[in-house]
Image (cartoon, rainbow, N blue to C red; front, side, top):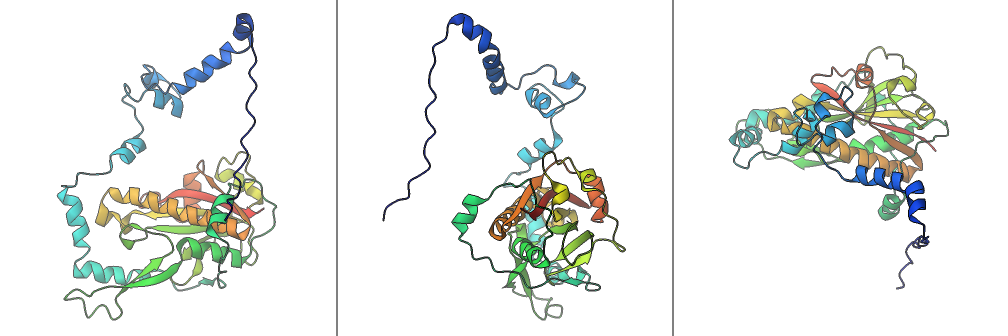
Length: 329
């Protein structure tokens, strides 16, 4: 079997001889700036006295500064010693009968009233290799509305229930568990606790009123995040979207982390697991968008408190971790 030829290498740049005077006049200044930027030295004496602490200023002062990023300190140091007894006890406690019984009934927290049933999702049959190679962040949208079938397909492939795992019933819990099992979802989650909920802010979805909704995986349905639905502000007020045409997209997808869902088991490590889970869900979203011919793009500069108000997240026990814009190309 003949191999497909790879992409052609770009033509080699042509070298041009210049005099020393031409080099000083034309290239020395920009070359010095490039070298300075690329040195990655972290020994700045001025990071702590800089009024506006840009990421560049904080990075340059990592070695000598006392104002390191708190988030960076956490992410680099959340891995504890293997001999940490607290972490082992927390995990083992979730094998106790009352913990197993509680986990088996977690779906009863979901509100079954006033649900918005989603249509059956579409099976995606595009080859995975082709989808992975063609995935791109899309920042321009056509303004055409999304359909509920598209929304249903995206949500299912990101966080839908895809199977079940039978669980051995601990002694003493038989009366509570008539059908002991854990529901498994499309994306992996630490301990199968699934602390990240998906919320969509519908701005242009056919058959769905503008507003914020929570996705309920077990019922494969939506429920209003607040009752009544809060009015949707101009999309531009919800983040710094730059060149992204977010106002022409069909929806914004929010990833909301409930700390109580996994921190009782994992402690402060639970946040790291939630961040990993959020990234995995987002990857599924982007691949599903690519397979459906939709455009998607992640947003880091969203206005957290405004979106959390729409999603009914208090910013204390429930936090918006991430945001994805989705729309028709």
